[in-house]
Image (cartoon, rainbow, N blue to C red; front, side, top):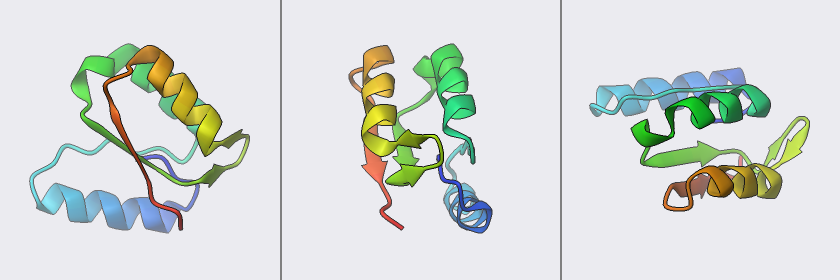
Length: 78
């Protein structure tokens, strides 16, 4: 999960973990992208905010798709 709202990230992360999911969360898009590059085979879904400081969602999605074009990306829109 990638979102600049710390409280929202914490809420989603806790909720998803309670349902049995492994969750990696970031409030910085560049750090998230670097992590994804190193661990791309570990992920099935990326949840991201539409606007993250320093990078628009479409830019982030394009960069993620360049690394792994099969990953599902969900925009939370909050």
